[in-house]
Image (cartoon, rainbow, N blue to C red):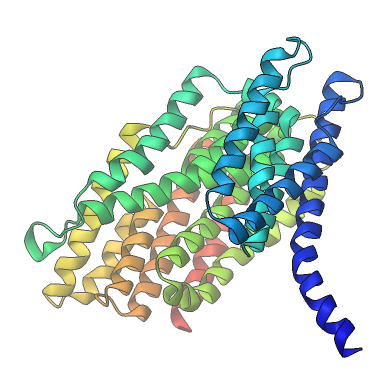
Length: 427
């Protein structure tokens, strides 16, 4: 028995990677073959389950041979396989030739087998899962991309520039009085704010205005809760019959704004989020309860469509304006701390909340990580800014919305203000 066990153990060590590789290759091949059949309505000729299983096993075997006979085996085998694929494509008839996606996935499957053999099994599984998702999403991705205009693509390029071009180039050093102006820190906040807002904007563009008022309110809150409040308030006055749906969208946008702030604060300072989570939940309660009630009572209007003029939050002017506002608030907070005017932070939070909730929240979160502002003061500042922002939304709804929207939104904002005051008292 001991002798058999000694034989079985090396066998398991060799066979295990091949079994895993074959499984990953078979799954990728299954998704690829299914996607191909959905598109061509016929059987795949060679790029299916069997082919990808063999490719994964071949990659695993090649990596094993590289370990046993020298590292040159893997690149030589890879070069030979590439030449084979190129020759097969050249010799195939144009209508039967495999596409570039299949070529790339074959090569990746080969490498997945090699990764399994060298012990990077978690990486191989993760890459295989991502590949299967991409292969199976060809049609949805094609439908989505058709909905984007040239202006949308320009905005995508702006986001890439904001994130991947500008951020690495700006200096990470403090300038000016109190060394309060750090260009890298300021632009990092722009990236965080723009990324969250861009996610909401993309959802609006993908699902379109027919997705419903609730969805528009949710993603509108990600993009710009103030703009969403303005848009739906005007719509309620133009079409009073839609006031219940517009009210639901405004309330959801305001709630999502608080969740968005919590996510951004947690990204910068988990400690601050831990202390601010309960007060923010109290602020969310009135809007959440009324939104649930509104959802229940607006199900009778499934065909209504929301306004589609929710703005893209990624314009260059928007980014520069936010950067300037963030830098100004950061300077004022830094000056208040350096001059021991800590009590001035709270009035500053109230003033900032009237213009932009994100800037003061991110400033306070960064200040907490730098030990410039105590956590309790930062929590108070975020709550005061949220109260101030609620007052602004109430004023916008009262001045621009229909009577039905006006009183409901004012009621929610008043209850939110009271809840914020109670949170401040019991901190």
